[in-house]
Structures are given as C-alpha cells and as structure tokens.
Image (cartoon, rainbow, N blue to C red; front, side, top):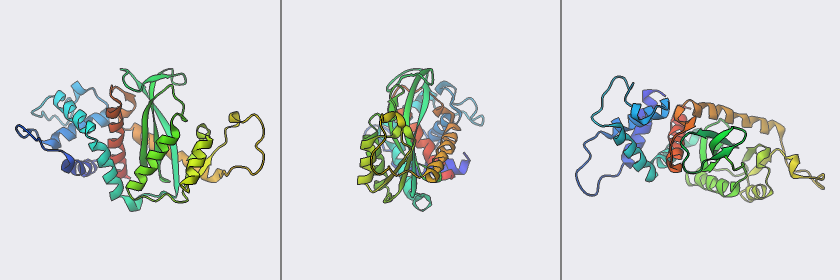
Length: 270
C-alpha cells in the first residue's frame, strides 16, 4: 500500500465525514485519524500500540480517539460507501463476464457477534462470502457468519444483496458466469441465478444425490471453472492486511468494515 493509493482512498472518505450538529468542531485532523486506521489495517497491531511505529509521529490524540472515530464511521456505513464509490470510479476496469464466489474464514480470539466453532480450523471463526470479477478484484461481500455455518447458509439472500449492490454501482451481469465450488451446489441458488440471467457454473456435489440425475445434465464448463482460482489471489491480497487474518473485533459490522477498506485499497492498487 503506497502513500498515493492511501491518499486516493482518504480523499474519497473526507467528503463523507459528517459535521457535528451541536457543540464544537473537532480539533483533530481527520487525515491523521485515517492514517492511523490504515496503519492498524495493514499491520494488525493492537489499538494501544497503534502509534508505536507510524514513522515516529506522535499525534495529539490517543488510540481511544482513533477507535472511537472508526466505530462511529463504521456505524454510519462510511467505509461501505467509500468502497462503492471506488467501484464506480473503476467501472471500466472491472470485468463481470466471469464472476467468482467463495468464502473466507478468520479465527476469532475475543469472541463477539457471529462467532462459532469451526471443526476444520479447530477454533472459533467467522466466515464472510466474497464475490470477485474475472481478474480477482473484490466486488461484493456477504454477511459476517459464525464459523459453524456452511457455505449454503442463507446463501440465496446473500447473493441477492450482492447482485443488487452490483446493479446499484452500474455494473452489468447479464449472461455472466458465476463460478462456485461444490459447497454451493444448491438448487434454489441455481434457479435464482437463472432468473437473473446469470449462468451458474457449479461443480456438482455427488453427496447431494443418491441416484444418477435423469435427463439433461446441468451446465458445467471445467475451463471456466478453473478460472475461479483467482479468488486465491484475492485472499492473498486481503491477507496482506494483517488485521483480516485474525479477528479481534467484537462487533460484526466493525469486522466487515475492515474488509470494505481493504477491498477499496485493492481496487485502487489493481
């Protein structure tokens, strides 16, 4: 994350910061607060250690002030709005001819909202679905779910909100392919995609069927399916922001806001 990329995102955030309706105007520079938030996102440090290595600068406020503003702005949905604005700004670079859907798990150390035990991870985790384009650019995020839920939990509602988000940003997905692994082999999800004129390219899960399917086989293109591994590139980009590796946020919306910030920086970078 270069200084130029960070400043581009900061310039998108500054107009969205609401002014105080009552009382005195804040005496803190919002750019300094945002720089501290980005430092937390990148390094994954504790809030109390946020000023330890920001180029030796000592800002005239405490880490509690930074967290207070982050929590306030997250509650207002500012980081999601910034992400949507940057998507609109990079509209021409986004390729929606082939979309990819996958989930990512993060260990949770402090518990909190939407945290559950995941047998595969041998710990308490939170799960979030990510939709990317054909180049691996993150486009939409699902809800934060506890780790004990599988990928099909409320998947139709989540995918519906994702496509509504793409439509709101002016992105077309007519006749696009949606690559999903066999964990998303769901008849309701297939039908919903077909109603949107999106072609579901899902590897069939043989455990869902005891007998051979009669009639015409479902559409599946292995060559297109292999392109979904750009998601691994996306997750590698997101893991470079160390705050996303292990969840310490108690509130689910605060945890999701970190994903919006990281995705905004990835879109600016890519």
